[in-house]
Length: 328
Image (cartoon, rainbow, N blue to C red):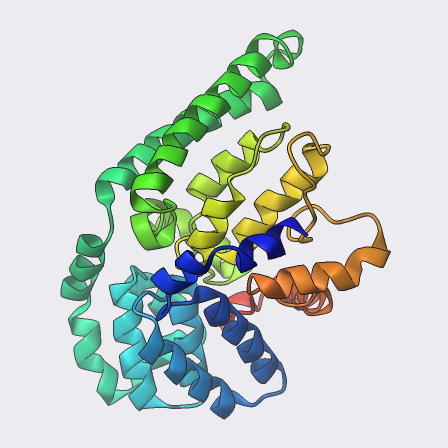
């Protein structure tokens, strides 16, 4: 299988990220989900201690998740360190204040001073990301969205001719620019360029977070690559997997991109396989292979993924997503 071979044949990448293997990081959060659903928050907290001590970069949503567990456990000591980490990773104060669980930090004496330090801790976050690259990605995404809207909603006679050809040409141009950034700096996702500015505006983001919960993520580059791989293209999986190992690309985005290659690549450039993140393999006999493939990059089993999807859907229907501990 192509991706597993990449994992085996890239010892240099493992060496480079020996102290920060984010495949194991994500596997740990899969285990934490099982702890949460079996109501073993103490074990979840112990696993989180290891994450905190091992990985200098922690995804914003995982900082929130850890803080939710602390508040649900009434663990004010751990809550203090995770609140500080959340601010250093770009989580806005309003998100903490408006979540049904993390708002509990206002009841802990140990976290009051940290709340007052929000501005300085947020400044640390801003200095840790490449805002110049973020601005470039934002500009590329704006163009991408304009051209995508024309393909989807423009005058129907032009959608698959003038607008479609322009969209395809733009996809290739933007891929070349993104690929250059990956080569020089790493994948331009949350670790490199931070969270979208969308989350800074509570008026804009509040309703979505109330509905879906505070799963703060960055999809800007991912969206553009999804569009690029909506037609047969040669992969850059060697770069993508090394960036997943290094914490620059989350495994669900790696899997999602490969789902598009498997669906639309038609074996033109390689024997691409599904990860069942976005598109699903129509042959259910492949589920055991998909499970091994997913585990190799730090994703949960398909059954666990389906379980979490059903739980998240039920939470949205009952309007409780913003008062429940986040799941992967």
